[in-house]
Image (cartoon, protein in one colour):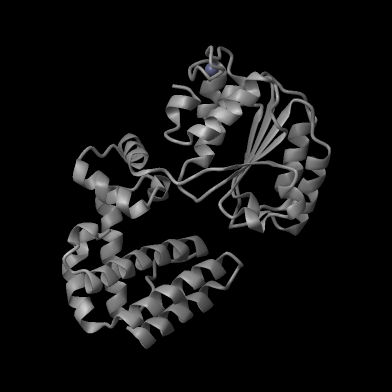
Length: 321
Ligand SMILES: [Zn+2]
């Protein structure tokens, strides 16, 4: 399976890149944008195989079993360098390693490839250093930046990249990804998870169905105690926590406004909880909580302090709930 078969959905992006490759008109730097959990990183790795595959198919796709493809699958290819943030930041040392990597000719492939995941987490010195790399691109190299928050990248970096906007997966594509990666086959479970992730099947990681649904029970419990779970220890986890609680708010609201539309609930296992809660709360409070928390989620992207965010949520729960 090459890029085309391994990646479910994102057909326009596949076509753009494979056509550019066929015509020898690839850009030197790409920016893969789009929500988290939709497969941008997997796509970048599969495209790296395409670029260096020893036995490409007639459609220029990778073979997925030559030595190059296998080395990339096991993250062990000498011409591929992947940068990921450490403790939520990409520092200048990582960019210096990129520069050193790019200063040498390809070792066994046709191109040197750099993938920078969560590129918006480069701090100022890293961004400035990286800008220099973009201004003087190394021969036979290709850089892919990945970001779900591209607006946080320097404009001078963004303007030097060929941008591809990856869309959310549709329901059928989401189900296919869940089947393949979580190994779930029960239709009902698949539909429930597809509704939960809203086109972003990657957000579940490798978690089991019971684990995922259990998290919602925990969050529903947190509403009763008016406390953010102690398990939330960093901003990404808090962001996920808020995402899940807003799903619960959305379901509570639906239960209040259209109690006959039970099929449209996202977490229908919480139906009993929703019925109980919807009798205690008024619509206005739920809408206010929903709005406050979605606003807060947006602020989290701008480095708001975790304990301030936690206190804020707990005070809003006490106020409106
Ligand atoms: Zn291959």
